[in-house]
Length: 381
Ligand SMILES: [Zn+2]
Image 1 (cartoon, helix red, strand yellow):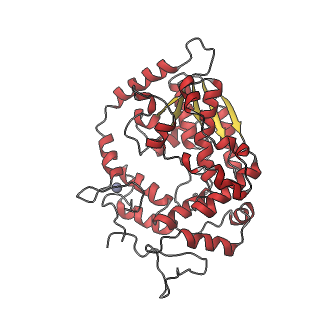
Image 2: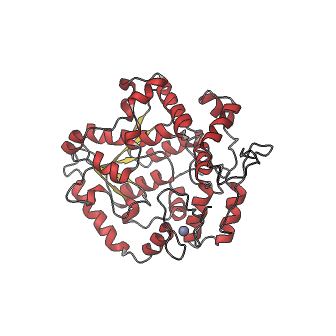
Image 3: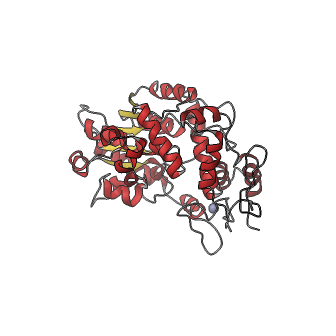
């Protein structure tokens, strides 16, 4: 049985989440703690780090901001350039399923007055890796996660720009490797401890069965520790230094041209996130069948913590929007992954945690006319 947080809607199936004796989850406890943080002091700490790493004579970029084109990319770029006056180099790893809206938004970020490197991996290799992710890991966005986290570090090494600036990291209780004086590097050791970005899951030997050679995997191979230490590549999470509030930030970046979705993103009730790629809704659907929760739970839980929704209202939104097989780009999905609808269901079956969903007397998942499955319980009962 799933246990649900008594304050928000996070379930006990969420990886690495724990609950206190009152049934409140870590995320809620940390959100409460944020109310007592001296944000003025944190901002001063941020200023000191930016000052330390920026190019003193203007002969190089001051920092690197990995961007997708989404709301966080906009906010990071806006704050670093406008508020702190730095000259960042943006690095964008292109997903193969970029949407028109994603394209528009990345062009809009550039119009804030910044240089941007757009990196596209060989699409045939990328697709094969995405298929590997889908079939073997139940994660169609797997190569994207790796590319987003690897290519900006490769650029940092190549351009000798040591500081990477990310947005939020709710998992991390400190500002990033730049704040660790003993070993301030964004190297393999740090990633193994905190990154969780599957660096060791890329095994060229596994890829060979999909016809991929090691030489074709360069965008997905993390730079060596030696090259990282030589440049001193490190990073910080802005969410540690600036109080993160997605909805407030969306209001700010809308004023500088950020485009929202016309309708809510599939799988949730908001239109401010996951606009850049066609198949992100599928990624979220797989999260739903593996763990029993998806993006609507994430968003509602944030809105509950920020007192924008009651828990009851949040639960209603989750029931309405979450856990449906995405249909908007289904034809593209089947084509991009070269599978039939029948094969799609088989892959879903393989990754579904059957203890969380209704099954028939033979233990088979019960699907409605649209192929959707139903959770056994949505709340503590
Ligand atoms: Zn909670």
